[in-house]
Picture 1 (tube, rainbow, N blue to C red):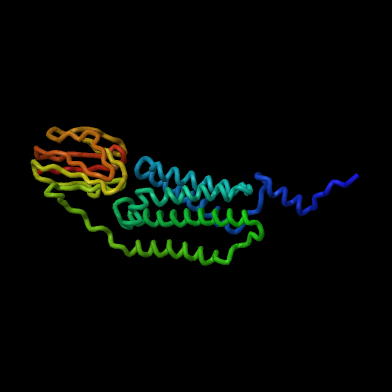
Picture 2: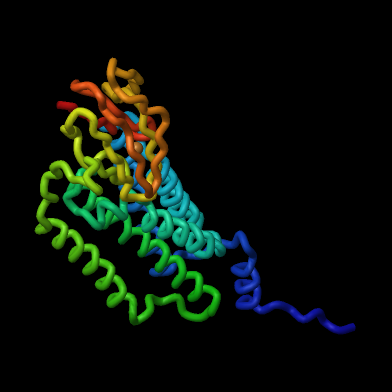
Amino acid sequence: MKDQPRMSVADTARALTRHPFARQAPSTLGRIAFWGFLIGGLGGLGGTIALTLSLGAPSRDIVITTICSLAGAAVLATRFRWAPLVATLLGAYLLYLVFTEPFVVESLANPKGPNGGFGHFAGDVIACACALLAFGGGLAATVQDARGGARRAPRWLPAALSLVAGMALGAVLIGAIAAPPAPTGITYTNGVPTVHLSAGNFDQTSVTIARGQKLLFVDDTASVHILDNGSWQNQTARPGREPGAPLVANVRLSADSAAIGPFTAAGTYHIYCVVHPGMNLTVIVQ
Ligand SMILES: [Cu+2]
């Protein structure tokens, strides 16, 4: 009778670590991804609370970003073998979210713009850096685990970390010295008074036009706005059409423009966006 081949201790250990729910100590790369998710998630949580306090409701995107970040940190904290792979997928989604969110893109292009200004800009830079670390760390950890062998920090790691830190710091410095946008007076498009809309607001709070003129609304981003007669008061939508005001009934804008009017009677009129709390425009007709 032959002896069954017996597994050596090393083979047993290897088989155990191959088990999908086997746990393993996080590698340096996995730790970097973990901190990217955690710091990004906690920052997102802070942003969510700040938005809720200032606007009455957080944006859907910051909530998704926050949940996604905290989920990535939680998955990595389980130390399951497949955790870095799942974290990489979450990190990729996070990168996509952060870099396509209109608020972020607008703030990065316009550090001292009307939506939150420099604080928002700096927060967005940190969010982008965290998303990069989360995805990059997760991907590198997954590749390293798949290859087997040593799970030491790779030689290029300090250079990669310096690059991300340098880009974030550079962006914040450039943002800090950027001039605030010039106050927007009245602009005209083919002779029609024009108000521009950014991701979450009008570019100006009021506009003065002459009796009989129309008002052109130009949405400069893909952000959806729906305009109606009325205004936001203390975070509550107050629909209402003043006597003499032209009807503004669910005028939907997204990367396009629409004309409202003509305003035939002198007076002060209010137009608001039902999508964005606090998005008010006062139209003064002389
Ligand atoms: Cu809007």
